[in-house]
Image 1 (tube, rainbow, N blue to C red):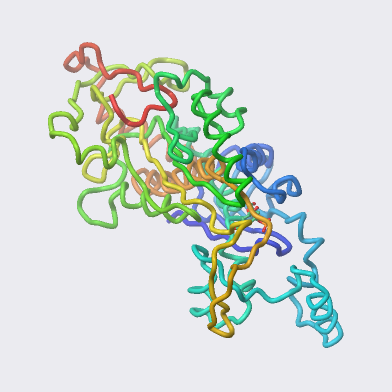
Image 2: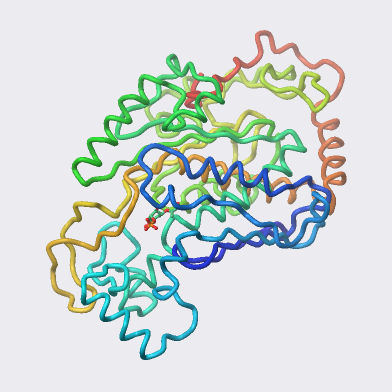
Length: 433
Ligand code: EPS
């Protein structure tokens, strides 16, 4: 069984993640993980913390001479900010002297050392403090923080290295910020250009308006949300199952994407738009066996597979991958820590206060959320690939996948798909035709 667990507080010493069940023989380097970690840190609208951290994961276990061993993989990302938090976040019990010093600092106006009690609307603060019995919200926010997603992205990078060997890739982009949406017609940027752009957005015009929106929010002491889209290609038909609710790939992906801090909704393909159309305008006509115009095999040869004329379902039918790209979008709410805070109440007194706690924060995290969305999709796909194809080594998994491919995609020509499926626009596909 493939699984992973993260640990770490936002201003603690480090974040850690253990991955268990990754097959042996997967090529893996710290460089490959660093590339994804750096992508998560970019994006217009991030706060000061991201200029402080230069996330890098040390591989502490599970890899030898650049290849996974099949044993648990242990990754560690040190927090640079820890140097500023050694006393506030100390692991050891505080001596009376240290506690008195922190209190004195707090009384002198040092916000970092003062207990947090004015709970922030929209954050985990109130529910978390009541649930665990804390009277200082720092004990909640340190773990509820989206800092934890650095560990998920590191884990996702390990899965990327594995899935790439099987021809499966995932990428994401910013599809919407503050109501401004990407127009697929104007999504002219290549993947590299998109990756280098301020908001990881394929449509330069939309992006300019999104940036203005973020600037306005910053001016107003406010925050903005948006939508990211993850597209996974090369996913074999048949991952997940319709036979039980908890074996459905769409359910697992929705849960994984929704588990990202600030994500409040998930759509596949056409998503909610399906509810506004007739069935004939929704369901993807099955074209038959043919060559996928967007994919190349490891030797550069065309990839034959079952094709649909459109991909409005986002690559999932009956909870099972259908061979088309998986298209999943996450709706990101505006960050709940506001520079101009909303009114709230005090955790200790239960009395209303004029403003909630404010701590240095981001204005918008949609570009980063897309990278985290990729990681969650890669982690879920890894689990489902291993459930279906098994394998203690990469070679064994690849062999099992190849044999299955031979069975589901006979070499003999099938019915001609005619024009075949239209190549999906790489970005801004929106899951539509
Ligand atoms: C976060 C608050 C900010 C963000 C942080 C998430 O951190 P800080 O309070 O240290 O300025 O920058 O995100 C990260 C540190 C990260 O790596 O993504 C929050 O409250 O959730």
